[in-house]
Image 1 (tube, one colour):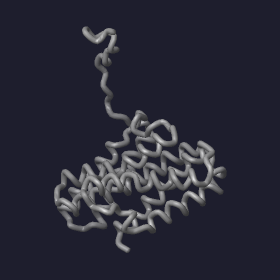
Image 2 (cartoon, one colour):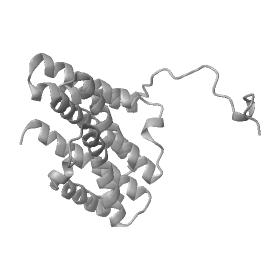
Image 3 (cartoon, rainbow, N blue to C red):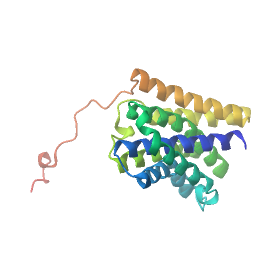
Image 4 (cartoon, rainbow, N blue to C red):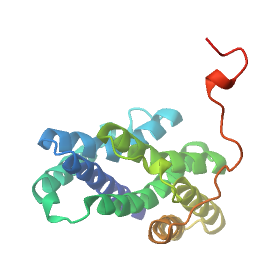
Length: 215
């Protein structure tokens, strides 16, 4: 198993854990744990493969990924109550998963198209989409709507991997560096509250305030 393959399985397991933790917060049954673990873990990669036309998607080709998700879901069904501040655990594990997936997605996009631009985009999509689905289905506050840096970390990690891979041609080095950059930025955002400047101008008007829109 190569470094990228190991990173992929690690990302699957970590993102599955965040899905299972969301299920525990909603007090779902074990099937609910399985469902959220699987959707969270494979959602981003499925979306990526569909965009790239790489069908069947990765978990259909290698069903072992689903077994990893169900194993993690079952483990947390019996042990999640032992964790204090499960939402904090969810956010930090999500940061680990994002760091792995932004590199995996970038590698997949680069292999499929040879385009650094596509690689960065698929890296960000792979890293973010599963977490978005998890929060939507579990009714959790979306990680995208939290003030701390999120997608920027995935963007930086994917870009670092893509640049170093083009310069060094050493997949292990570029993958490790990309994942480390993404985690340091996202981890710093969680620890220190790093944010990007938000839009500060006049907010959008209510439809009733717009001429011609009143009923």
